[in-house]
Length: 348
Image (cartoon, rainbow, N blue to C red):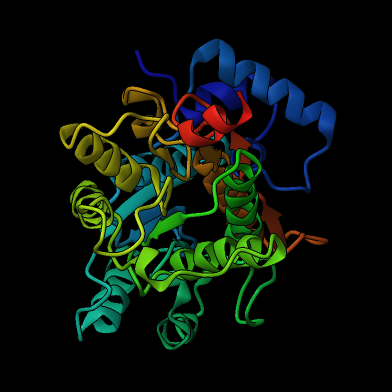
């Protein structure tokens, strides 16, 4: 028979209210009492009925993840990280996909918040990068934590977890330069994502610091998709005499890079001897290609969990919270990047 909160209170020798405080992770419970209750909870395998708890009082125990992103792996990692934090702290997770370009997006999300009695929201790009949208939600007295691209928060609307795409992109581009590449192409992601802008900035900074002239013919506008990588690589690797052919391609994410690699191999271009291809994020795409992709490790699962822990701290009015934190994705070198074969021959 399923254990109840009464069973936990009786066996632990405490009141039902004390058990509730422990399950809600409230700071007012002594550590010895907390340990005793948690031990009984584990013994009885007690699982609180979160839906009933939400209905029973005025306090909400649900948070929402609202997103608009075509990258399935990104979404899955975010969901895992958010759910991990929610489970540890006794909250439920509501997942709400949407279209950030919809003219009624603000009204849609406001209605969802009111109907679902949400305590807080985790926002990811591009929704987290829409200040008017964020302000409208904050007017509902709901807590928000944003995951954003950049090294510093763009405003003080609400707490942020920042991802320093610019520094990571600069490191990846420098890796290609150090291998001997000077004709380095850039296939962009969606233009309305700040990550695209920041990664492009890092690419341009690396070129400038190495005194490599920027070649506009090597810049391809795109979106965060496999097909964008395919079409971008085909455009870049067209016959000689029609613009500079790159010896390396910086793809704005691993999905684009996988598409570029696929197209290059169809065209008979040897990877990495004739063309190096790098991605970004270290998603499963980077490990499912052949050769495996050099990329930047962006720990989306941990980023999401940290953002959610911060959100739940705000909901519980915890003190001394660090309201802005930063991640810098780290370079992972794999087999898709190497010294250009012509440079190797010249050295020999």
